[in-house]
Image 1 (cartoon, rainbow, N blue to C red):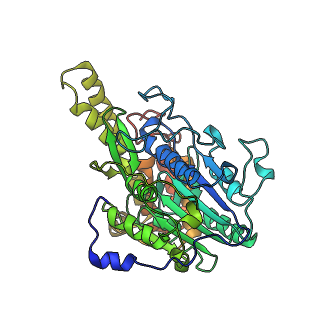
Image 2 (image 1 turned 180 degrees about the vertical axis):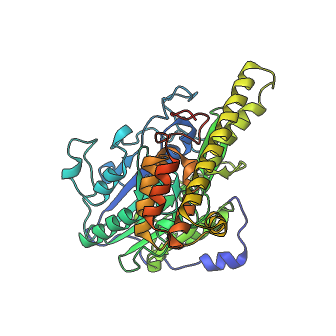
Image 3 (image 1 turned 90 degrees about the vertical axis):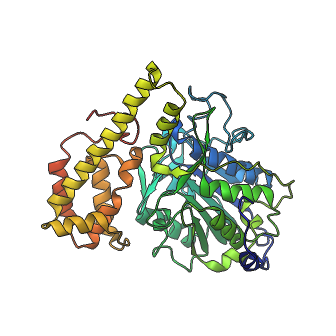
Length: 442
């Protein structure tokens, strides 16, 4: 372990594993999703590939594992080791053997919903056509990794909103697609996908990288690959799974270890807490394996949305400041910051046009209200993504969505906010504002 856990915590973790196996005649199923693309998001696909290796090594057959990832990283021109993806500095390849069920433009929120709800007809002719075909005796493990915002998980070209997500989970329950389901979600503000909305009585247990109002963190910057290789929460639970006997470790123990090792954000748990007393093997595989340990290296953790900024800064630090390459990177850094200011100004103007007083403007920009008015927020967030800044391709824009939560909770009507957006967002919807450049120049 990277940290020494106190005796108090150790005693807390000593729990009886109430079930080492899935129900009689039951199977294990898994859905693994990396919702991003582009090389600077390398870590998301690395996390999911590593998760696959854990499940595969522990005996879950490939026909029961469904993987969704863009698959543009392993052979990207920036990757100095073509065909290889690692999740730890000097780590082993985690890309080999990974099923490619849904790749590229097939990685969408709707296909994800179709997969987890077993809608085979809806994915006919798409990817491998695999969906969950689990039943009432089965255990399901879902791992999602990408950018997020309040009530939103990003996919490469669209978003999954909390209302649709919870509806899909309820559909799984109604269709008796599982005995118990466990979800691990790595994203900024990922707690908001469950807090106050995940029913406690549908046999689901979820843990998240962050609370409903904070960033998750990238880690393991690699000077060779010039990108971050993992995310703090994800590598903590996976390195624990690699090292431990999953039959004798409970989900609660893994949660507590991950929570204590993740000192950059507040790891959360939701849903049916009795499930946390079950063994990790009941969801990640029951086959015995040799423990794997990786050498300790600094996390070098940074907020997920600031990864493009930190990559540029690290590249610059290695160069002679007067070199041509350094000047080009400085130009890219200037553009990135300029684009962020542009987005900030647009959001500020939308807020000013949506309310009547300066006090209301300040309140909307400084508070972090809990999301309650799902209908208002769903309407406004979708409209902002369509008309102003595509959320799925602007992770920095996602950091501003709490403002629209505040406006909804203040009682501002969606009609007023949409009218403000129509006046402010006179440009085409902008993509990639969080990178060094954006498709529609500003």
